[in-house]
Length: 357
Ligand code: GDP
Image 1 (cartoon, rainbow, N blue to C red):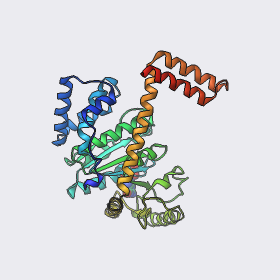
Image 2 (cartoon, rainbow, N blue to C red; image 1 turned 30 degrees about the horizontal axis):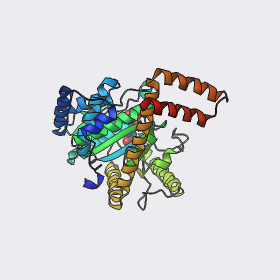
Image 3 (tube, protein in one colour; image 1 turned 45 degrees about the horizontal axis):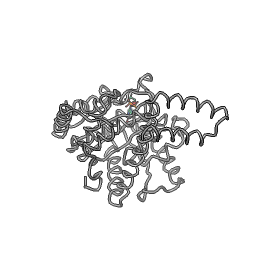
Image 4 (cartoon, rainbow, N blue to C red; image 1 turned 120 degrees about the horizontal axis):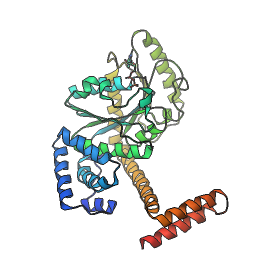
């Protein structure tokens, strides 16, 4: 896409070192540089290694991961980032398989990433499971990466976001980020993508479909999947119901005329899938032209920065035994009503300031 989507001048290696507070050795720096070059040359093995590095929860890997992201980020930002959610069984994998193979056939390079902190794995719905996207997983123009391990949404979301940087620098022009529509992860996915698709099944209101209140509000495009065979008439009725409900919703900033929109499609037959893609590109391109996309990405970047800053400060407190103990006893005192929350926070910040002086 155009330079409009570009994040601008990237973080330098010095920034990365400042970010991690660690200086890398020359061997590490050379390794990172070589890995970045191989990622940008489109080497699949390097892509996998790079994502493994940025996903690593080992703090010792963080300086290299930060330096790698610093090297790659000036080359990222050019893809259409599409979020996709829906309850297990609605047909997410099938839809991604059908849409993805059509896109690669049309010359696109498609990366599929997943955000799944709750681990719906136990429910048999494994996001980004390659066996569920058989054709796409064997497609040389596609790259599928399952959700990084972890129970904490923040951590899983951060690692997926960083994986977006890696695949974009690797030349993928379309990034599909999949999540299960039963928790809070869809908000996290909406915060890292340009457009958000909600997949639903024919029939039943959102309560029946297990769709949480609030998800409708972040959806740009609702797709009633399985609009085939005997389900087709019901899919059309469901679509009309949702289109009506969307019409009652408050107009959001960055909504193109006619959006949000509800459509029917069949991942099984492929019918309607191209029309869904047209709506996706129509909306993304409109937002790009109107400046909404740049604004959205800037706001996303700012929110991640603040979240990372807060996390870093909290980690700094926990890394200091005396401060961690003070924090623990303050929390007890605050909960018991013996200490006002703001005063406690101020006291801890004062200690932090002293420790950093
Ligand atoms: P996910 O859990 O949301 O990823 O759903 P899957 O893609 O695994 O699909 C769940 C079930 O629905 C599978 O048995 C699919 O074959 C079926 N399915 C998916 N898409 C369609 C569709 O468009 N039409 C029909 N009839 N069945 C579908």
